[in-house]
Image (cartoon, rainbow, N blue to C red; front, side, top):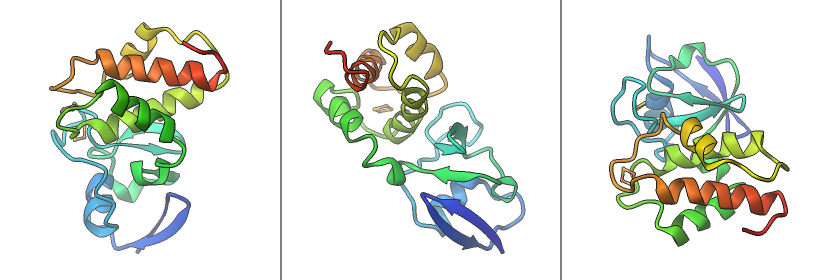
Length: 156
Ligand code: FES
Ligand code: FES
């Protein structure tokens, strides 16, 4: 039995062999906000935070996780502004990639906390591992920049 800290709670999970963190979150813990698509670390749909670092949970063996895991469910309150900005700007269509995008953006926004002038190209680069087949990325990048500016106390 492995103990994982997920969204602030200790959870005991009977991890099987090389089972991925994504599978454990979805199938054993019931946190289905984390999506699984490519299962090869190439699309970012499964992004969660482990000790604050954006992590592709589909290629992360759950048995090797030694830090605090945060999923989209645990971040919901912290990123209320970002979720609203995504909705207002139409930064999603089918929504499948959106949890991963929001989690990855959370890591970026934490890194940039308090600093104004976030460069859209930096956002584009840092979020390049999160693939969206619907939106063309423009609205996603704009939403992240807007929230960074607002959190830094600068109106855009
Ligand atoms: S499902 Fe994990 S990176 Fe695509
Ligand atoms: S909103 Fe459909 S894949 Fe991103």
